[in-house]
Image 1 (spheres, rainbow, N blue to C red):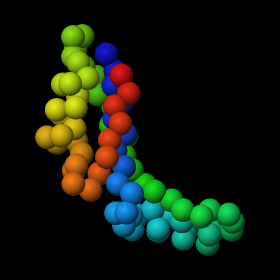
Image 2 (image 1 turned 90 degrees about the horizontal axis):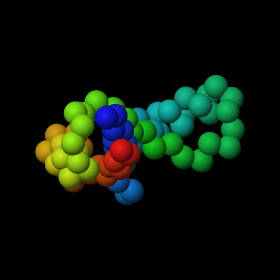
Image 3 (image 1 turned 90 degrees about the vertical axis):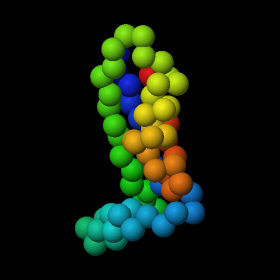
Length: 75
């Protein structure tokens, strides 16, 4: 079973990578970009029987820094 986990910085946490992307887009002539938040996507291939609770435990223990990041699980 394939599972996707999207990890993003929480609102209010500075995102220097997002700001760098926003600046680079402006330098390339793309106008109208008012904000960029950069995150990561993690794809897991899990054995049948794995539960959302299992994936949540993975996120809480390793995949996301829950102090500054939020995550969404897509099963």
